[in-house]
Length: 114
Length: 113
Image 1 (cartoon, rainbow over the protein chains, first blue to last red):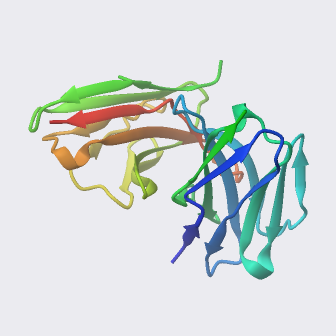
Image 2 (image 1 turned 90 degrees about the vertical axis):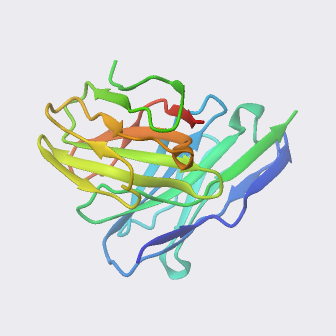
């Protein structure tokens, strides 16, 4: 069975701190996809990144970076120099190859204080 | 603008009163899906549709119905809502292009009294 674990329920930081959100997944598939979505206080879900299981390259997009390690089944998300606008709930998710069903973790609420 | 539109955004109803939450996408996506979000549980899939007239159960389908008569629309029907269906509902759609990226509507917050 597939499963996504986000052990950090809530994280609070002060602006400009770096913060890492952990994501650990379980799957027996060799081909799968990992995602991060952001849910700001307004409630919508915003797609951030997709990574397939054959691509372990880390990715950086501005202040955001993602570290994918198959050896530890982790897909962690780091925000550098956090800002108040980063305050949101962040979800990690997994899909199997050739399906579209997203299996979500329980989310991590990030609060960035000025 | 490419988007997934859900209506209504907020709904308060009473037990047993049938309701429909509409979902429409303008991206010509084949795949559409409904999720519910509950505290501590993340999002769980209710139903999905691979294309017109093709629907199937997700992880928590009990108490819900769906239909897919047109490609753009995927309504969620609660025939007899109960308080345990109080939740935040999301509709999502994706192109079956191998990227598996789903785009979500803004959500519908439902309270069943």
